[in-house]
Amino acid sequence: MEDAKIHGLWVNNMLLSRVAESLYWINRYLERAENISRFVEVSEAMSLDCPPGSAEPWLPLIDASSDRESFDKRFPEKKPDDVINFLIRDRLNPNSIISCIQMARENARQIRDVMTTEMWEQINILYWNMQEGEAIWNKPRQEQLSEIRRECQLFYGITDATLSKDLAWRFSILGRLIERADKTSRILDVKYYLLLPSLDELGGVLDELQWIALLRSAGAYQMFRKAVQNSIKPNSVARFLLLDPIFPRSVRYCLDGISNTLKAIDNSPSIENPSELECMRGLLKAKWSYIRIEDIINDGLHEAIDSLQMDLNKLNDLIQEKYFIN
Image (tube, rainbow, N blue to C red):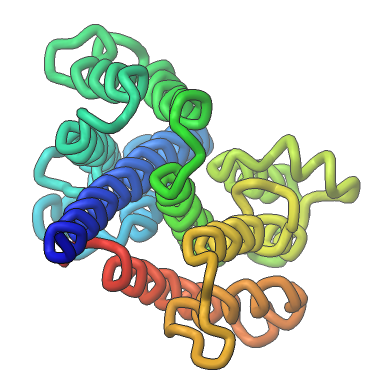
């Protein structure tokens, strides 16, 4: 009887781990696809101010995805169309939109019996609508990207409206927040120095348009204008995207959410001997809650974001190690 009870607990834990891991990665992949669609859409608008055929507004997107080495090897000419295809429809690029949606759907297929019917239907529709020959590819690119973004956001809404608010749901939120913090910091890091103008352009019309484009790439322009009444300046943009406590795509907001979610998942942490994951989530929250943008800029914005990226990767590894089946 005791052996049967232990076996039953083991099976339940295995099932929860499998479901939690799949939901975690479904949300990471769809958040990644949504972010890439926004990045490409904004860069296309910026390209109108550049010479025809220029790759200047496009290559930073490859850097933001950490795929520059692979891209340069396959596309040495670095044409804008190569970048766009690589980011949207290239099945050989594991971080392209279509690859992310395919991986999200594969994770959903593995837990189809435990996720809600509405969630499965939505991700399945998104997947099939992205196949070659479908109507979406006959639309203008801006409409393609907007539709992809809406479909990803619709999945988030369906998840929040139909999935019980248990541990599985919390892992969904956790994956979404980690990916969002990652992409917000990456696009700021890559574009911050690219957009810093020469002295004769500082404060000019083109300068402001480029910073507006950066805010739009993070879905932050309207909320930034609501929060910051003065003219758009590099430091104020960096502060908003990194440290704003109430904007849902800022790094600080995401790290607060990550910390709260992990705390809810592990509702009985050891006070005397906290785990490495417990220490990491607390330190990250504290670090990004009590730092000023002036200090970040003075010490090096790139260095700060690089450190954040390593911390997020370590956080992901610790979550995998503690909660998911290896």
